[in-house]
Image 1: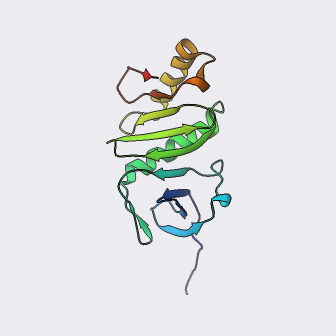
Image 2: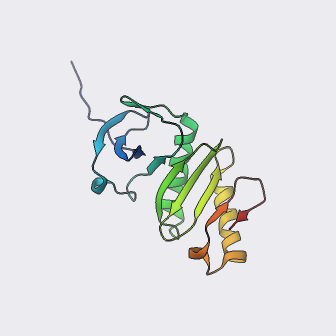
Image 3: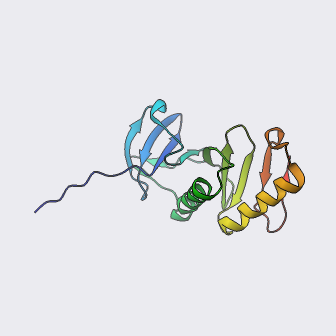
Length: 150
């Protein structure tokens, strides 16, 4: 008996101006038209660092992708204030960045707890940024209890 199961998309990958659909394990399922990408259903991950897509595989450490899924699911289900445009990987070690729609970049440390960083973000916005979120360039949550912003 041979069972065939279609792979399901779990994310979109953007590298070298080309879009791809990929699964949880980093396998490239197919190339995608940018108009097909809907970052509300699953995360769009843009790689701005060293090339990671080699053939039909995206060679990225699993902890980076797992962290993106944790952030995406937490924001999507429990924190409706934020509209995610995309996640960004650059050359920064242990870092993932979220580009918000009409808002700043949010920088997260993948070794720190998702909820702890999101809670710190909400407190920081409430106490410091207030209604000026759209005019903020970035909020950096990577360094323990400290928050940096511009």
